[in-house]
Length: 217
Image (cartoon, rainbow, N blue to C red; front, side, top):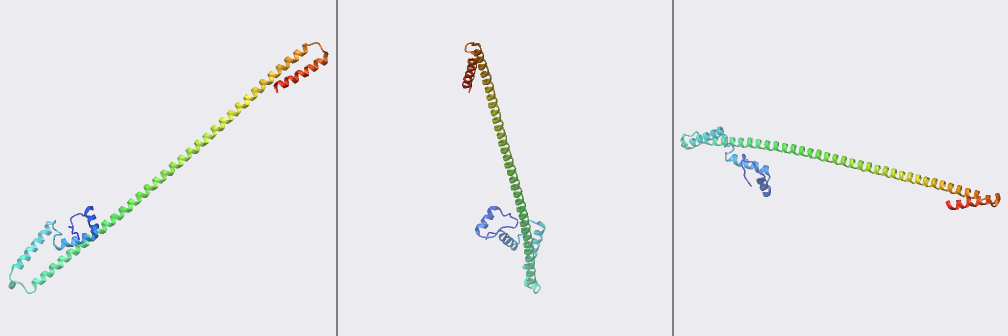
C-alpha cells in the first residue's frame, strides 16, 4: 500500500498509481494519516504544538532516566496508558476531520457535476432551439421562393397568352381588311364591264365573291 502524508496533495499521477495498485484513494489517504499520526508527525508544521510535544518528550526522557527506586509504584504504567489514550484521541480527531473533509469534497464534486450537467442540458437545448429556428427559416424562405417562382411563371404564361391573342386579333383584322379591299377591287372591275347585261354582271359578282372566299379562307 502506498503511504502518503496528510499535508501532501494527492496528484493525478499518484491517483492513477493507486488505482493501478487496486487500492481506494480515500482508504490510502486515511491509512497514510494513521501512519503519520502513529509516528507523531501530524502536527510537525505547528510550532506551538511541536514545542509542547518536545517538552512532553523531554519530561518523559527525564522520568525514564530516573532510577526505579525514585518512581512511584504504578506511575510508569499509568503514564504509558495516558499517553496511549491521548494518542488514540488525537488519531480519532484527525480521522474525523479527514472524513469530514472527504465528505465536503464529495458534496462539492456532486454539486459541480450537477451544475455541469445543467449547463450542458441548457447548451444542448439552446443549440436545438437554434437548429429548429434555422430549419424553419430555411423552409419558410424555400416556400416563399417557390411561391414567387410559381407566380412569376403564371404571369409570364398570361402575358404570353395575351400577346398571342393580340397577334391573332391583329392578323385577323389585317386579313379582313385586305379581303374587303380585294373584294371592292373585284366588284369595281366587274361593274366597269358593260357587256353581258345585268345578269352577266350579277354572275360575275358572285364568281368574284367565291374567288375571294377561296383566296382568304
